[in-house]
Amino acid sequence: MRYAVKSTPSLMIECAIYFENKSEYDKAVQLYHKGGDIPRALDLCFRIGEEEDRINSNKTKKTVTTQKASVMFDMLNTIAQDLGAESSPQTLARCAEFLVLHKQFEKAIELYMMAKRYHSAVEMCLQHKVNITDEMVEKLTPPESVEASERREILKDLARALKKQGSFTLASKKYTQAGDRVRAIKCLVRSGDTKSVIQFASISRNVEIYTLAANYLQQMNWRESVDIMKAIITFYTKSKSFIQLAGFYDSCAQVEIDEYRDYEKAIGALKEGIKCLGKETAANNSAQTRDMARSFEKRISMIETFVTAKNSAKRDPQKMVELCEELLQDPMLEEAIRAGDCLGMLVEYFHENRQMEEAYKYLHEMEERRIQLHPFLDAEVIEEVFRAVGVKGSSKGGQQGKKGDRAGQSSREDDDVEEEETGRGGRRSPNDEEDEDIEEEVDEEVEDEDDRRGKGPGMSKARAAQYPTNQYFNKPEPPSAGPGGGGRRK
Image 1 (tube, rainbow, N blue to C red):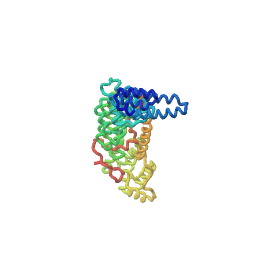
Image 2: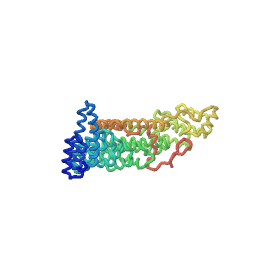
Image 3: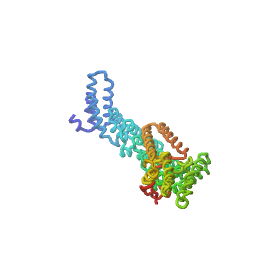
Image 4: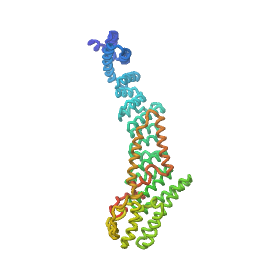
């Protein structure tokens, strides 16, 4: 053997045949390998491996064969280390198959990539949960010389595998290269990369992409970003999703009221929403659009009445009281304004005029409506009214009313939505195109249900309380701590 390994390739092959006939397989494989006959070396390795399976019933031979197989595996592993891109695809594939039998998946995947067996490599990554690194992604990306349809399928398989393992940004890139831009932005949405979502949607000319991006952005903290707010409006406008855009302005109005007590800006937002509904009516005069427009108009009317009452507090207080009493009798009050703002204004007015019995009447009404007192009134005012009428009351008041309770309710809804999305993320079967399409149809049905309500994701009244923003794209100032619990922006 010492002399054989130092001889010429042809002599090495002859010696390898001799050792093979003598059943000294390790020496034969080594000489076949060094002599350049890689396929024959691999054939011998495979044959020994198969022999182990055939004689499992014989314990003695099984032990010997297992030892031989172990030696053959070590030899084949050595051969695999020497294989490169210049090796024939058939040789690489056979070597990879042997490594799979011995659970050497990562090395097998590497050989499949060298052999340009992309589908096999991706499938093995999924089946055996091998993490696909950035370097592997580049190797698994077929060159443009590959036939177009085949290349698209390979890229989609790769993208599904990346999405399954949570590499959403890379998956989006591969879906884009495969020409599936809708799935690409869905992956970006799941990655949470807001900047990339905006950039991707901005260069797309696809209605569905615009809508998906806008729906996603509404779930972000757009109250702190003028750019995100502008993007939402732009994308809904480009997709002609005027009902969803009207719903977004509805959220803006609710935020102006709930977070900033700025009823004038809320009116402006609702009027913008009515403009959007007018555009929708021109294209599709549905009952939903008409009902939504009537609701907006009713709320604008009630808010304008409240604003008039506020402006009349000093010059015509009797008018203010009458208007507030009228609003408090309206069953739709909480749909338009916060009852606490209306009642708090009455308490303050009667307290200033030392009409403590009247002030207490409205304080008591706040408690009956289960409205917390502190967000709307100073503690000193509350205590002074209670003392004046001889009542031992709690300055904390009752529980907060429907509007005032939105923040806590929105937090619970956010947790529910996040749990639902997390749970949904693990159900896809990336090897099965049909399973993925079925799940996406379910997602689209949920989105369609939001559309039928006239609101995108995150547009419920309770959730809207977490989105303070300025209707005219000015950066909002934080609410000041003081009477009423909410500050007004300058």
